[in-house]
Image (cartoon, rainbow, N blue to C red; front, top):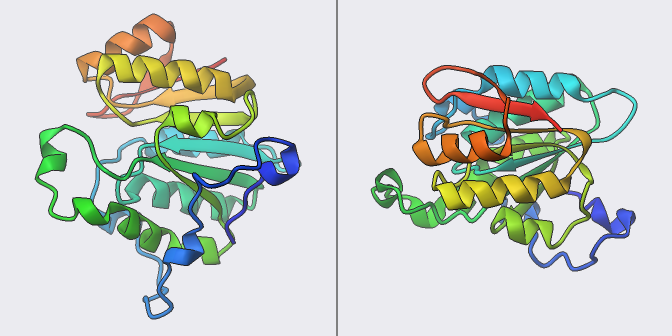
Length: 217
């Protein structure tokens, strides 16, 4: 089921920015899980996601924000890891679902259907117990609706523009608890690399073509 944990936390009760995934599920859809590898998108940070799920304890809630979901390729991988872990991990998916100014997005014929495609791909994971909240908007607008210093991990994969990435890092730091993990990928992009170097110095890096980064704060 979809949950809104901030109803209990004392945070803003205005949940209008959130969209209940059940409202977008079609009962006639095939309920077989779509393997993440069959979902169109870009994702290589498997080892980083594995690491972050491993950081979650078994005896308390772990809150994970994924910024930049596209059609759900990376989110589906993470959902599988969360469900299989048996841990109490709450996943917050944040995306405008409008794409970006990058050429690959302009050429996407299903750009107008991103949200519906994403929720369809999350369908069975929610049925299997994934605690998923979707915010349609930016990380900054998400932060305005929730408590600061309330999250355990943030993965940034939104814009690749320097100014945007810098803002996302600043917002992510406000959202994270002390000891939380700030992470992202796409270090080959000049704007990403520059922002990370300035605001997350000494971040650990790894991965393949789309190099990821992480740091405990």
